[in-house]
Length: 343
Image (cartoon, rainbow, N blue to C red; front, side, top):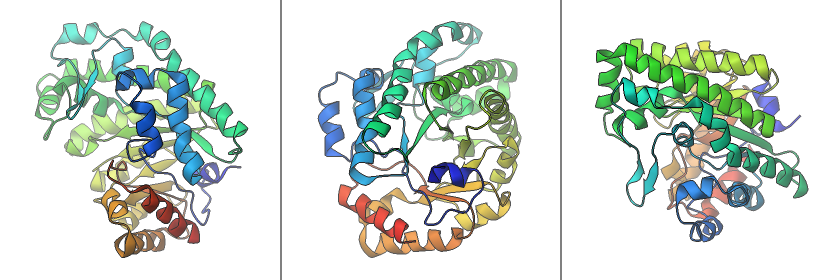
């Protein structure tokens, strides 16, 4: 069994498997070369040959224990018919979802056709891993968790405080629940299709879960994830799910009730303290500060040593606490893998 899959089954594999969030991306010159030839980011995500190529690039360079599908969490609202563009220097821009008509306009029936190129990417990556001698590398598919996807749809993009989406959840709970229901059911179908196409692990990114009050966290983070995990487990009982309720803090304990197989931990959390909240066989993933990799040297070495020391003896996946940043020197990533694999 592949090292990542063994860890997610509850084994304390050591040295731990390692992959990095956003490991395929702008810090790699080979990625920038591909991106320069594509008109926009959505086109890159929906051109299977190119998306598969950039998914495989960091595997060829570093030999990570997992490849993660190159895509974006906002491809699901795009597939539902919601507008999406990525503006240089600004990030994603979407129409602001505000009322019942906006929710009713979302069309789950169109998702399968629109994400068909992404499923072809999954198939190409799975075949490419085998063809290029990376048969022990697991392939991770993913989606944004419903609340985080809703954040971008309601806010119209990123936000400092997500006031509009939190306000809707409080002031218009029935409307917001309808949106969450649409996204939850669409996420199940989207993730299931990735498994059929060849994904061996699934990850649910709830990047903004930490902005919620405890009551809203239970309703809009824990409840949808529980529903998604249960549906996926019924359809694909041997495919593990990693959840990443970023900035959840002590609420991570309650997130474990979703029955995910692994929990991602963000940079701001003490990974040992979070691990102590969780069942002993539940894998923990994280949580090196991406800026420590930018710095490299003794700073990175010390941070890595602290994480490895805290997690030795339990199921653990070494990762970052958030995505790798564009200014990261590629040679620092190589040094990071040497540290992790030295145990």
